[in-house]
Image (cartoon, rainbow, N blue to C red; front, side):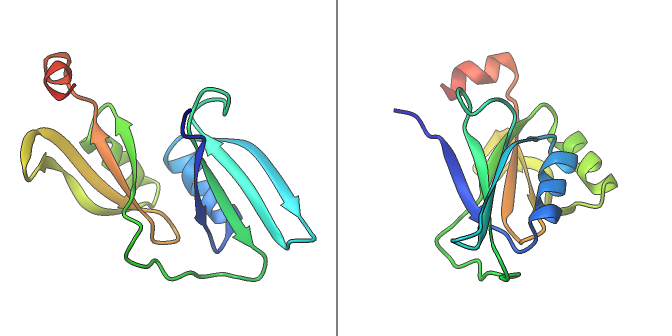
Length: 137
């Protein structure tokens, strides 16, 4: 078994596709409209679905906002350098919620948080150096 995708509902599909492709470097892998169900799906990721977990953006026609609720936490992405990733995202107009800094309870882990256009939080986790990777395993 493996995780195939995580689905999130979005209020403006084009805006969300632009965010995930232009600010986070994902690729639009496929898109499918379902006129009878009045929704469109877009699958985005860093590699083919056959071997990678991806994000499914669901746009329900005519629905432009959703309540975030309290159960969903965040998506997490590994980045080479969290501070540089924040700077690049900010330069492209992205919203930084928490600047790159050591995690409160483990100073060896550098994290940052950003927000997508629908208010979903995305954690950026800096790739550990080779010595840290062994300690985290």
